[in-house]
Length: 286
Ligand code: PDD
Image 1 (cartoon, rainbow, N blue to C red):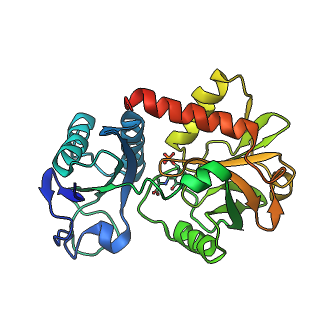
Image 2 (cartoon, rainbow, N blue to C red; image 1 turned 90 degrees about the vertical axis):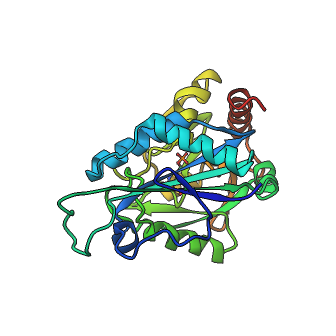
């Protein structure tokens, strides 16, 4: 079992130097990415990730060099060749190699790079069980957060603030509204209703969020309100949780200096978390 890379369909050693100086991803962050989790040797929700990838490419006017079927095959090759059954696959597509000029090259040959790495199964267990603490931070990102672009400066600066505060995540606040986490979506539970930011240009439409909103909550008969809320409102909520591919369903028990609810994982959060794990187990035959 070893991490392994792939460049334009060819398997490579992860330590190989494969990025040319003039790649626009390297120079401008001119590209898009996806992260998919692997459970029991199966990519979870791969179709949804690939659908979003093609949407991101379209929004940035980067041509798609591969079909979804080919990309799915590459995911399979990485799993097979690496022997990794529990891990994650990172995929990025850039606008390719060209002399460094801001406008698009006349002829774009997009570059695909991928990597598979094993998961650390112990990493989040305690936090999934007992909940995580988070901070709030100003949302300093651009206005197309719906595109999963390689440009993550606002996200990484916010996540670093969380790390320095010994917290798991930073919730980003723009114009008095909580948008999402630096690498996850966010929801609170108030009087039995799940509140989460609506899908628009200010958040990434997370695959995990979509599963919760469109599938798990309705099946559990829990109402969802896709509506922005303020940090003050958030601190009156009884429960809170994060949603993301790596984060999965992560209960939140503390925000800044405030305790969420009674400081333990809430009932609705736990139900959503259990339903999410059950779906993974079903679809990945664990
Ligand atoms: N992050 N919002 C942001 C800003 C994200 O970066 C992510 C995912 C999500 C959740 O999306 P999904 O449920 O589709 O993973 C929301 C990935 C995992 C990352 O950057 O590593």
